[in-house]
Image 1 (cartoon, rainbow, N blue to C red):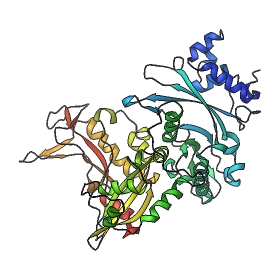
Image 2 (image 1 turned 90 degrees about the vertical axis):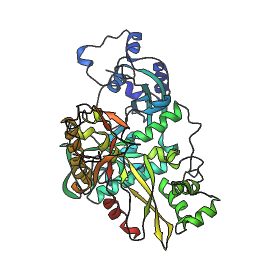
Image 3 (image 1 turned 135 degrees about the horizontal axis):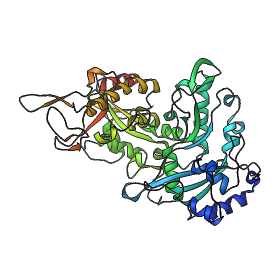
Image 4 (image 1 turned 180 degrees about the horizontal axis):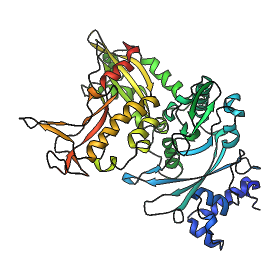
Amino acid sequence: MKDGRHYSKEDIILISESAIGKSLDEILNSKLIKIGKDKNKGGLGQLIEYYLFDIENNSESEPDFIDAGIELKVTPYKRIQNNQLSAKERLVLNIIDYNTEFANEFRSSHFWYKNNKIQILWYLWTEDGNKYTYKFTNYKLLDLAISEDLKQIESDWNEIITKIKDGRAHEISEADTMYLGACTKGANANSVRTQPFSKIKAKQRAFCFKTSYMTQLVRKYIGDYSNVEKIISDKSKTFIDYVNDVVDKYKGKTQKELLSIFKLDSKAKNINSMLVNRMFNVTGNIGETEEFLKANIIPRTIRIEENGRIKESMPFPTFKYKEIINQKWEDSDLRNTLEETKYMFFVFKMVDDEYVFKGIKLWNMPEIEIDNYVKKVWMKTVDVIKKGSIVKSIDSNGVRTTNFPGMSENLICHVRPHAANAEDTYELPVKDKHTGLNEYTKHCFWINNKYLEKLFSEFL
């Protein structure tokens, strides 16, 4: 019987150290271990638990190392463009029991009991690798009690618990919170649980550290973190507390007043974004600061005209035709983006012929809208591409009309071009029947401006 669950903190660190620079294959060979078929089926994390740390596979509610009070997590990262490092996935923690988790305070919760100390063992994921060949490169004991992020993690936990207490566990979304999320966890969308304050069954979810949060840990403890700006120095403040303190100083000021305050003389198209960066004393882009990156919050400025109109719809990144047709809705780029991302809108409204900074709105799309309205647009878009029926007609001036879902077809979003010009294209998986083209102008999903107008009605 393996007894790794009783290892000390020092034992855990020494064993972690012994794995650095090695793959699972090399660890097994060094121990003269050959895995039988019955032990070959587990994921890399389970195999490391068993063969490196001597922990029997289990679903116990205690931390993996009982005596040390430490949970073990084996997690991947990868290299992306410009040789930058990124977490490959979120770090899934314990399943949320809606019927019991709400009954305690944060420091006496099951989440805290199981996860307040986490031994992270990182491996470098590569496309040509497998669970036996990935190299373990770094480890870190994450002690939440002394973490600079504790205040925000506790606030995130409370946000999730509040929804449970309000009988809205079925409305929980990973984008509700900043660093600690509640991700879906189950075989499929039908994996549901009862909740204590509503008869509506809710999707099974687990606490997790978001991919964006894990990416910043990877860059901090493995990569180069020297150029990342930080905006919060006071550990006693949550992310939103700090943002609200800054926003309150400038709310109600006109664009001209802000230009004067920050000694800016510019008529640039992105002048409002420049003003927001100055509000937070950021030399670069506020969206690239540590706190915004950790929380996967995308800052956007929005202009509301005097009559309440918002002229522009909001674009998402362009999709590649060859990639989107191979995705399933549940795991699609668009759904993941909407499920995991929160937006911070900095609102400027026209008042007496001058834009006034009215404050911020923190928003993420409700899951019911994602899986109904947005899903329909996504499904039709994929169908049009697969059938090679993008172009519906071409008028006498050569202007194309497509079969992609337009603004009039859906209350929330639509598809239209998002390219430098008509020649800015992506390759098609199926030749377009009407034109015979093998590539087509870049398109993306857009949130309708009318939907945005309703979203910002509080500022009218």
